[in-house]
Amino acid sequence: MLITLTTYILRGLGILGFIPGSVILLLMTISIFLGIFYGISATRRF
Image (cartoon, rainbow, N blue to C red; front, top):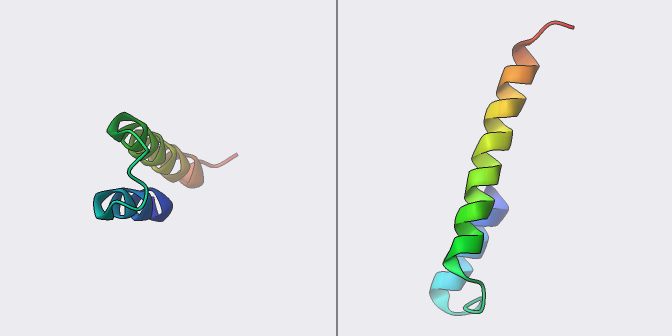
């Protein structure tokens, strides 16, 4: 999530202006999904 947020901030500053907003939203969605998946799998007993 930190890398995605940093990319979003750098895009806002104009340094990474060539990255479309939809790609950043996709990265954020994947990051949130993986965080939820990790949280669920960490609480499971195998």
